[in-house]
Image (tube, rainbow, N blue to C red; front, side):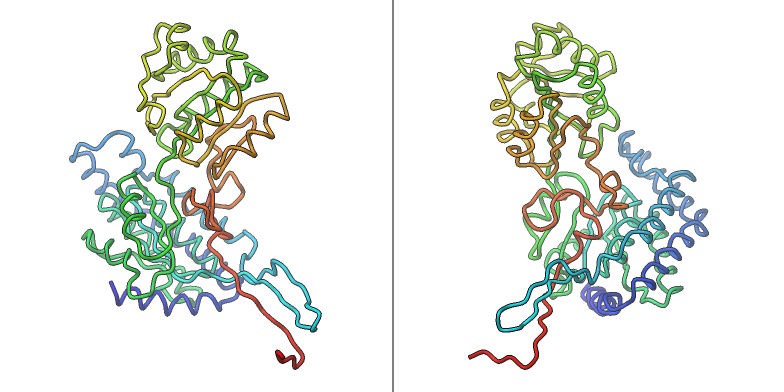
Length: 413
């Protein structure tokens, strides 16, 4: 692992100095290699899927692991799409001149070596490798044991693309072992080789990374997301947003887990919204007011308000007003993604200002918590911390900056 880290550090130096044209050429070559190696990747995926099913993994888990022709084509297209993004490096973020004549520039630079630790989604191999390359970084990728074969084949395609463009293959390295001890070594920083760790996976993985890492971490622990239906919400719009936020894909971190309904519209909105959820196959765990309105609703417990279900289950509560909605989200939420549905612009402005989440939305589904939907091309994850990377972590968030100072002989008195 230490040798792998040293190779990544050396490769990061070369990639950071490569031109945007060469990095983009490598990305296009990587996309081409993914298409050429499709049969080998899908064969490896079939073996991973067989093991997952034999181990009794859930249907949702198997779906996250599954690649087919259509999904793999999407992975290749996403890598090529990242090549089309603007170059994030060398951008002048600010410039100014001091009275002594010194001219200052703040300029974007790569972070260095980024370690990505992920579980069952093999597409993360391509997304993470491509985003790191576009932003001039080297990537150390640690795949979960369930997707190890698939990720290995994808990584080979990425490395072929790098070589074809004249860049070091070691700019993207997959940890070549399923041994969990490798994760511990990465979290120690590989003797100074790792600059940032990004975990992509379940709560236990993220909690371990956040607890044990000796380097900065971009991550979120929970995706306990809320939709607040304000008193001035249009019912038809609220119904569409709530159903999409909860049920479009229940296993993603942007799926809504709690529905808050304002007392001011409960008489007209509560029963139709809860009934629509139940009729769509979603279990509802509600407060006393919700149960009184819809007999099919189950009783919510205190635990439900803080639960990320990642399933066809939602908690529902009637709140007195905007203040109580914001207070509830602050107490039980995870600072990930929260939405308000309302025609009242002042109420929306307050919600967007007062809810301290990485992503806040007005009249839109929480399922837009995705780097692709932000126009980032792809994402390496969602971050809920307060470092410079917050929300979807795309190529711009994988950059730091430095100061360039231009003088004409100045010395400090």
